[in-house]
Structure formats: C-alpha cells, structure tokens
Image (tube, rainbow, N blue to C red):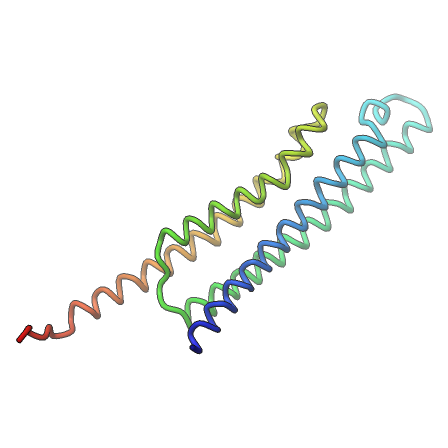
Length: 170
C-alpha cells in the first residue's frame, strides 16, 4: 500500500514538472503571437520615431517572454534532476516502454502547445519552433539520464536474481 502512494506521488510530481514546462512554452507562444499581431515586424523595421518605438516595444516584450520561458525551463530542469535523484533512490526500475511513452507524451505536448500558433501566424511561423531546440535538448538529457539510471537498476536486479539459488520443483 505504501509503495502505491509513493508511485502516485512520483507520477503527480512528474506531471507538475511537465505542466511547468508547458506553461513556459504557452506563455512564450501566446506572447509571440500577440506581439506579431499587435506590433507587426514589418512596421517595426521602417524608419521613423514611431516605428522605432514599435521596435523597442517588440524587443522588450520578446525579452520578457524569453525570461518567463527560461525560468520555467530552469525550474523544470533543476526540479527534474532532483526528482530523478529521489526516484532513483526510492523506486525500482520502470518498464522501458513507460519511459518512452512518457518521453513521447512530453514531446507531443510541447508540439501541441506550439503548432497551433505557428499555423495561425504564417509570417513568423518558424519563430515558434526556434526556442524548442533548447527545450528538446534539456528534455532529452533528463530522459537519457532517467533511461541510464533505469537501465543500471534493471541490470542489477537481473544479476541479483540470477545469483539467487533456484529451488527445485518437488
């Protein structure tokens, strides 16, 4: 019974970590979309004092948006490392299919948060995918660490099991 509670706690914590990551991505995509709609890039690149103000407003909004996404990504990374350490210490190995399923769901959720905005804003659609490189690298590293940790636990459990004496069937 206690093991089930721990397992559920780890699942909930993992979902919260992914939610923090998705919040940062959604804030970035929403702010980029509204910046491109309200302050078009073509208007910001023309000469003139009013257009210079538009350019500065775009730059400051993009900078603030990047800060929010960076904070969410840092929280995801550091809390994910801490979660991985606790999970590694207190939990047996997980089936590898669940690891790949969790990775696939995380990547799909990140893309679902980004693709609708890029489809609506065709003039700047590639701007939505540029921040995903940094996100995918960190998500990939966390999952690679989780996979390696899980693989080591799996091999140790298999070796321990093979060292146990077998009982003859009578």
